[in-house]
Image (tube, rainbow over all chains, first blue to last red; front, side):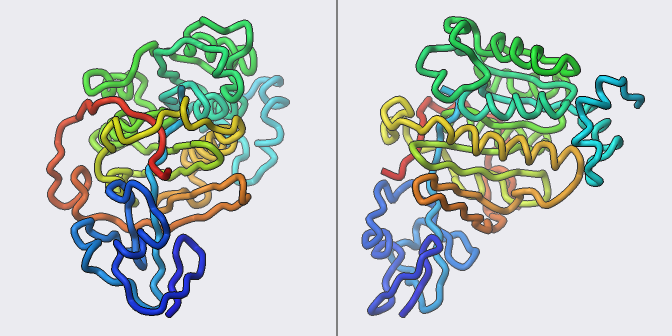
Length: 69
Length: 270
């Protein structure tokens, strides 16, 4: 099945959980990434159970500071 | 408002734009923008807003100029090392455009002073050019509470991001990023580094948003996070949902007072 992650196509053999997707995409500090699927914010508590499905558009939103110093 | 001959000349390229015109330029001259942080983001934002003729610019920063700032904080010059950033910024702006009144606040924003600073001149728009998450959440919450629009931004290494909050018209920063990461989890800007031009690109986008808001033209980055990757030369505009459960602007807010979080800076991607 095909999904989109941060604008890029990703092919998967089967449905996987958000947590598994974060692992595959090698996202570090997963406790602090915001995940959005098809314009809905995903509750952090659902990362282990919610699965991504064919055609889903997933965005990982990262904290970014910087600016003044 | 009657323009002087000098103003007619100075702002002629604005006035000729049908979206700006004499009316729009008057709005800019009568507008007030507060820039919190006079660094990588705030420096270019302040300079373009000054050049554009924003009548009142507030600068907030406690720091003094350091040599390592000059690689990106283009409002400060070599001769300014050691000088308070707000003073150095004020001097540059005054040399650029005498139409601009610069108000300086040589302090860090905190729960104790941020409302007073915003209210001091009843600023129309606020630019977050800070380098740390406690300040970013503080600015967000203060703008939600005082119903002020603001531009958020962050830069690190070769990446940047920005979004615009307008009360009642889209999600706030806290809708998306619920609370600051713990200080020990985050590398500092000093450790991570940043390409000098990143602040120029993202800070200039923040200035563009302020100008568009003041003029009431175009589409703002409300409900969108714009991300920029300089190495891939890739911009992405990610649609953000409203978060009904947002702790500060949602249906039943749990945060009703400003919070001073512990200090930490930069990003968490790696």
